[in-house]
Length: 213
Image 1: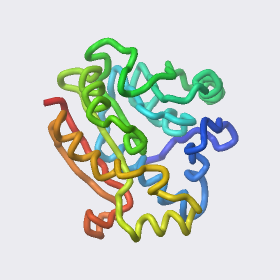
Image 2 (image 1 turned 60 degrees about the vertical axis):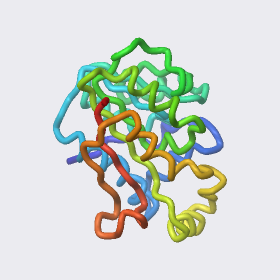
Image 3 (image 1 turned 180 degrees about the horizontal axis):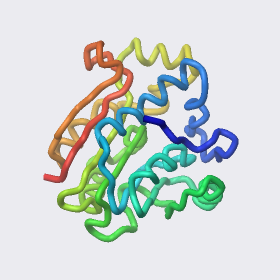
Image 4 (image 1 turned 30 degrees about the vertical axis):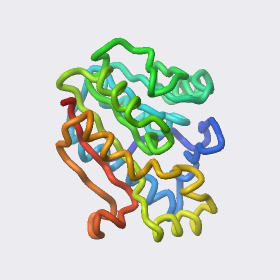
């Protein structure tokens, strides 16, 4: 299976915690791209009428998601939606992008067959409101896939060594709250983590496949 990402030369820097450039090249790129492979494995070969990516950032994953739906949407709090739309158009990807919060989305109820959130919810303070909104815009039989970083002292040290960034500064204590918040609003169908050969407590990424309650 081939992973189609937005070419690095088209990336739009959308804010201080937009690390989309990490997806390209080297060991860090290999690790970063595992997030997208986790999503694709949980989605399998399914296609959807409408897909929403929460926290689409620079749009790096949208070209791949575009292959799996007829209508593609994205929401993020940054205000670079027009610039990202233009970048996507250069590779033939059409997406409706909105600058809004996941805690108050401008979409009708049951708008989407699939919602994807990759490394996004750990930046949201009100996780309960975010989960409630995602459940609202997701169709009754829709699919939600969430990828979030693990949380351990060793993992955070590795991030510091590879990137110079502080997980504590970026995420606070929200990583530990994501799974409980998801299970309050959704039915957990599958859980995966990377690397698969280490205990879940020490994983780099956790990935969840969910449905509405």
